[in-house]
Picture (cartoon, one colour):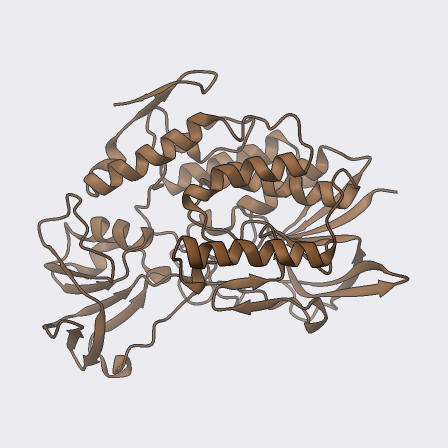
Length: 431
């Protein structure tokens, strides 16, 4: 009898899970639950902010003119090259969504996807040392509908982590007389024409939104705590340190200087959101660290519960494919897992390495960056995957490093570059 797997979310991770699960119909039977009316997750752009037409929080953090901050060659699933965007490498969010839809049709994934279906709860049921999962779902369109309770052998959580904004604790924030907006709700640069903006946060969103805004606003004060960015930046942008406090319309920085601003743009990241997991799941989210997760994927006690795509600062689609196959190998017995004690010890070693050797703060527990390449190889090796579908080609590591070097030199123009690759993805050049 096939292993029944509930996949929560029909975005990048959920589609990847569905593709590999459906490739083994004699072994796995998958159902993907997606609360939206289409697949794509965060890549489904909407003008709406706040609540959607069904009264649910808007999931997408896309803005109208967003282009990928990685070349499309790094945004493709193993086995299916991206043709969307023509020769352009840094493609539009609409083109990424087109690609994801083509991926779903190529692998006939719609047969296992239930749209407009929200997962209300996931609960482990332990019987004779075997764990199954009670998954309760409800129709999004019909709030009066009776919830459905289904039983599965495994659950893959693929609901993303770019939907619930993280707000900083800034003294006096509530007194700000201008407009406070999180990047999650940013859509159009024209909305800020002629205004003075303090943009707080120098992650990927903060840097890219600075560039998107600069031709429309009067001034941007780019507030962050990292050493000054030496890249080519917009002429009307000034780098300033962290925000210390706010006094009505005035923003005060940690070096004592202050400015009057019309808008405070918070590019301060997102939170993991797992409201459907019941207390019996024994999952702890502590300041952006989810535990106990072996290899950032498997619950060390309930190993049939996996989390795909928790890690960040990655070349996403290749990594997701490695994580999915690792989780599947644990389910079908292809991989023999260590004891729970050993998995917990391995997880703790990984965390301490990040803190002690890499000097990462606690909330970087799932950050990958340069670690992702060996991580991908390790997952496939442990899962006994022989054919990696090209997920670990050296090209990807080289392109990723080059992209960050280009970004560090010229934040304004790096997305205009074009990557040309050979058909077998073994060579490339940047134009």
